[in-house]
Amino acid sequence: MHEYSIVQALLEQIEQLADENKTSKVIKVVTKIGVMSGIETHLLQIAFETFKEKTICNDAEFIMQIQAVVIKCNICSEQSELDKIHYHCHKCGSTDVTVIDGEDMFLMSLEME
Image 1 (spheres, rainbow, N blue to C red):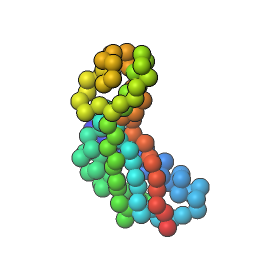
Image 2: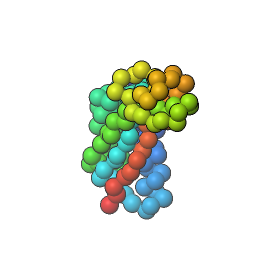
Image 3: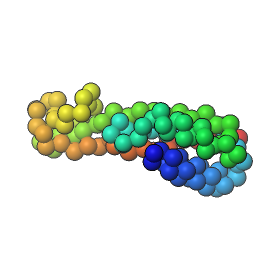
Image 4: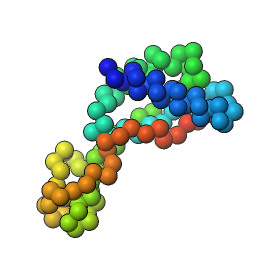
């Protein structure tokens, strides 16, 4: 499960940000996870709950905002969110598109005390 290594890296990033902000407690962690990121959200939740113990995030709430795939057509410049993973422009039908969101995971915000 690569979700465990993702959570370990996330916790390291949170520790660094907490140090920079001179805080000793994180109460909320908000992430954005793309549907095409390859991350199993239920496994990520389990990994976070497992690894947060005895860290600065011990009592933190973990929120995952799921991001659909967003594409931009290279022909007509239309930007659209995909309901299904079918990479074509909803406006002109072209398959010459660029994915602009929905493939990554980001730490969006932390709430600290």
